[in-house]
Amino acid sequence: MAEEKREWPDLAGRIDGERHILPVRVYHEDTDFSGFVYHANYLRWIERGRSDYLRLLGIRHGELKDQGNDKASAFFVVRRMELDYLKPARMDEALEVVTSCAETGAAWLTLDQRVIRDNQCLFTARVQVVLISQAGKPLRLSEHIRTAFSNADFSKN
Amino acid sequence: MAEEKREWPDLAGRIDGERHILPVRVYHEDTDFSGFVYHANYLRWIERGRSDYLRLLGIRHGELKDQGNDKASAFFVVRRMELDYLKPARMDEALEVVTSCAETGAAWLTLDQRVIRDNQCLFTARVQVVLISQAGKPLRLSEHIRTAFSNADFSKN
Amino acid sequence: MAEEKREWPDLAGRIDGERHILPVRVYHEDTDFSGFVYHANYLRWIERGRSDYLRLLGIRHGELKDQGNDKASAFFVVRRMELDYLKPARMDEALEVVTSCAETGAAWLTLDQRVIRDNQCLFTARVQVVLISQAGKPLRLSEHIRTAFSNADFSKN
Amino acid sequence: MAEEKREWPDLAGRIDGERHILPVRVYHEDTDFSGFVYHANYLRWIERGRSDYLRLLGIRHGELKDQGNDKASAFFVVRRMELDYLKPARMDEALEVVTSCAETGAAWLTLDQRVIRDNQCLFTARVQVVLISQAGKPLRLSEHIRTAFSNADFSKN
Image (tube, rainbow over all chains, first blue to last red; front, side):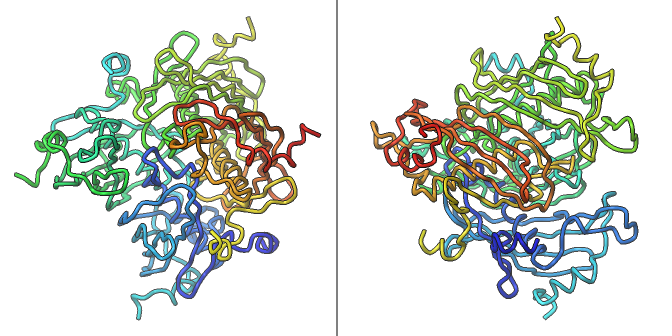
């Protein structure tokens, strides 16, 4: 991990105060025959943003565990999304995914995410994720996760 | 088209009253390492449902035109989505995408879409689509499209 | 399963002698900004063909097991592919994936797959798959799997 | 472009002598229920490698033109691929796509591509791409493109 960071310092984006910024490039795979980015692909980008924000906060997917049953893995899953597509993105553009934590609950996080090009917002998402066990049961967020996001939780202020 | 329909009669699903039903199978490509279906892939499935509903109503993507500029193609694009993930789907399951029209405007349609397994609802989406020109300008829906959905527009009743 | 088959009889395609045929539709998700189908998406289609061929032969992914360690799941994975892109496919077309078994080994299968439009071949693939344990070790194919493909194994004739 | 490069210097990877190196992260979207990376997703990664190699050589997709018909766009398309899957990749890993030019023809390029983790090769591809017009006709490569790759064309030595 340490070595990887030296080689490609921005592979997981950067934390900038209470938000995370991840650059993404529009490739062939992201577009459709309209010439614009295919709408579902914004969800892949913002999931990369959430994953890399967690990564830079020190939370690895592979290490999430069901604490009542520590043999089993745990997963963040999306429970709800509200998506607004404001302007289209096109092939070859360099965009940024901006992620911030809007609210934390016992078993969930709500994140605000945007895709921007220069200073223009192309897409916004409000995303609620929950931590679940392999059996699909919601799990309490660990103190580690709750603390990591607490500075960024504007609902507490 | 006629021949294709004989060969694979359900390839575009079926219209059942005021709704469209499309069967989808969960393949490797739809899952992720959690063992569940990857959340963004529901958007691919419901887009197939919208496309095939339009297809069975006689509206082909390739024939959508900017009527003020009939050389140019027009495209339905998603403007807004509200998504609720209720229960996970898994590899090999046979699901159905159920689509109905909730409301029609001058330049947009709002559709209610669900993914169901047996009689259980796994996922719901409210989707607003708009017709745009290649330059990105909203276009009026043709009388053909508005009429096709009018029986299914519960907001008019 | 029985009921599903009545409802959507062709969801898994059809076996026709020594080959399997699966219809696929070109949707938005399959295209890219060139207007053609994105090249990697043929791999999704032919994987659907392989999965549904196995399904109709009575072999379910969820039931593949490491026979030396029957708690663990086993998976077919692709070891090698040779792909030829002959003609492009476009939005809204109805295509067929045709799959036949070319050769079987102790731990592997080689399949010939084609994507056709009407009687025209757009794409061919020669695909070698192996059965592996969750730890990544190759496993012998069960008698059930070997027998299911034996009629179709032209290398034995 | 200049500003983007300052902000995220490695977004398009780096040219290192006669090869291009692009870092890629394994995200949820890349995996399937087996826990490994889904085989078709290596094609998305190596396409990103080819696109970014062209980008750093000064060749932009949007600027490729049919020189006999300069209103029309031209596209690189894949004609043939030979793929070997050697070892699986898993969630959260940081990988590199290494691309070098093996041979150039009048209308085609053959590229050797590998996906590596640390110093271990997980996947190799030999990829032939051709430049085609929107009508699907092969086009001669411009002197610019042929020169850009000429140092890297080992078949000429």
